[in-house]
Length: 484
Image (cartoon, rainbow, N blue to C red; front, side, top):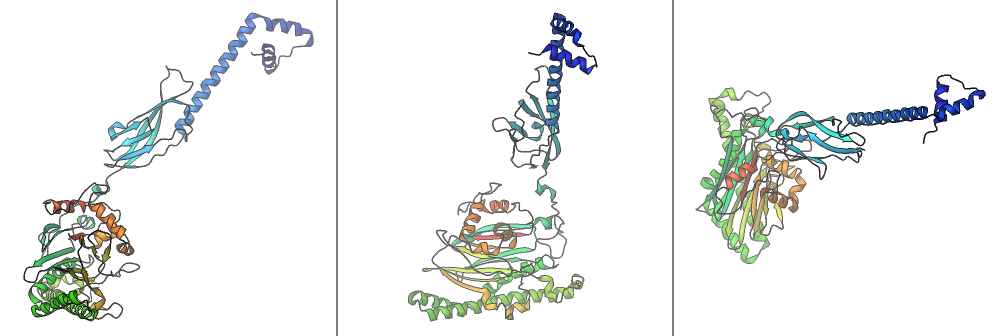
């Protein structure tokens, strides 16, 4: 209850009206009058009304000016941004809703106070928070607060896909995907031009080749990564893979192979370690001849091409003709015997070969990688010095294995290895290979699956689609061969 006399005194004092002691009785009579009391109460009510209106208006202004930052979205990807009204100190809101979300493919979920959905447009948008606060009348128009929402475009859409020049002297297909039987096994392999090459219309530098040799029962798979900074590396990788097949089909010593296999059978019976060493030496000698054959085939091509098309060899940084063809090379030669599988492998460069055992409890890396601390540590089959390097002896690039069985044999270029394994050390971890297989079998953001069933006639297309995965900063050619 307002003390009306006190209020009147305050009002008079504010107006410099002084009431002498002799008129206090008159003032008391004035204060007790009904008109005076009604007028004061009316003034107080109007003041309170004004104060409450100002409080509401000021609070609305504070809410409107309060910065609300919500995360950016990406077109085509599920989006969810929780609006924590308690944390924002917006607990006095009577209701809240959003305008401008529907046309973006989004909505406001009141149950968990979240903006969610899958954005259908990209751009910088302003959405409206429509609200009222406690104290506002039903007749009052709702308030509007603008909130910025950025929807980024799909990164894939920013890349161009310019076909390579089919009229080029050494043109080859931008993407190749195949699936076939390979002896008692099956193979699926894909080699895809990287986005960095698609964006400028350059060529696929990766390549592969495989074959089952009925006469010997051996199978071979070769994968090569042409060094993109060398103008004819796409031909170097193609020549390297085809030359591997050519050697084992047309230049392999048949008699030596018979002797090699006889020793294998003898070792299986005797388990003689000295005999195993002889087998390993014979394997390395044979693989050495194969790699030398590959090197010489590329050299031969380079010499012929330089005479026929000298205009292609105009890089002052190239020291030799072979520099134009720089390519890595990995290959695996394998055959099934009664006692298991014999594998012989070679690797130069930064492309891994790995084999996963039957129950997938162990994965073994079959080659070491040429990697440098700052990049540029890669070596190529086109470099003569790899054949007589003291730091990395050629013999260390060969591997010989006998396994009872296996589930998968992998050969890949760094376009797969870099985004999926990141660092070389992860290639030694079976858990990472299990993750890789789970990824192939559908545990990925695109939900794309490769079904490794012999009856699956779509496996090559499935692998091709899977290999379009997005990985920030990894846009090189991708080649992956899997024997299963």
